[in-house]
Amino acid sequence: MQEVNYPRKLKNKPNFTYEDKSDTIDIELAKRRNKWFLYSVAWIDFDDVCQIIRSHIFAKWSQWDQERALEPWLNRIISNQLKNILRNNYGNYVRPCLNCPFNQSGPPSTTSEGLCAFTSNGLQCNECPLYAKWEVTKKDAYNTKMALALENHAHEVNSMPQDSLWNMEESINKIHGYMKEEIAEKKYKIYKMLYIDYLEESEVALAMGYKTSEKGRTAGYKQIRNLKKFFKEKVENIIEKYDIVIHGGTSTY
Image 1 (cartoon, rainbow, N blue to C red):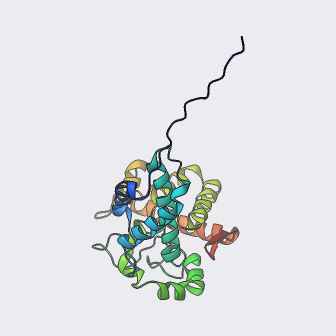
Image 2: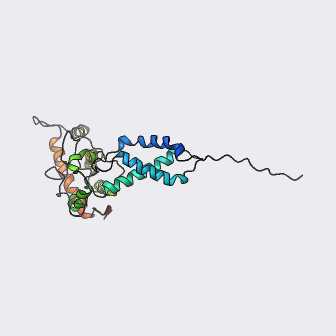
Image 3: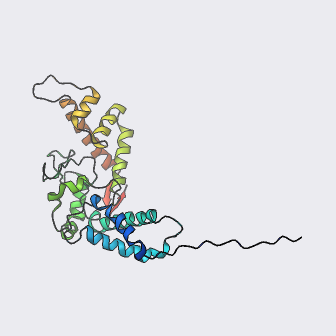
């Protein structure tokens, strides 16, 4: 007897419209509000950003496989669009102190100046070769693009997401890598605590067992001061040796 193959029963594939899921889209966008930090550009706020992203989601709506969950697809689009918006309006112009391990700017209540552990005067300035290059190639474009000076928004530099908006992070990681190769293991451990883990000097001194006999001086004051001077000179040599620069948003070496 010949076997009869009956057709499989087809599932009803969902067909949600953008309007059907507008509440879900609003919820996913609202989750990002507290992570938005770009307030230097006066003509764009988070509500404007949400409108840009909603328009993009609407244009891409047909690409969502409706047999899969919506939220992961939405979050991928939202993340990519946030990166693009930040890059286009901020990252392509901002000074290279962004995400730099030597950046020591505190919140606005602490300081209105960009503080730096690399320069001799402790400020973000053209003593740093990366800053000097930015000053020549990008500062004018930055001043034109920004509605307010970054000096009044030091917290924005400190709160920049780890996922870099352009390849600055790549350059910093190269510096970290070369430092690990070229300095002693014990010194790199201190370098890592200071400039990668961002520990306070007192925490580093405690971890290393440093002490002091000088009245009014914190433990490890001399050791850490000398080590920071050593790190500064070493990083300068690495930047020059490997030609680590920022140009046109791309790290070259």
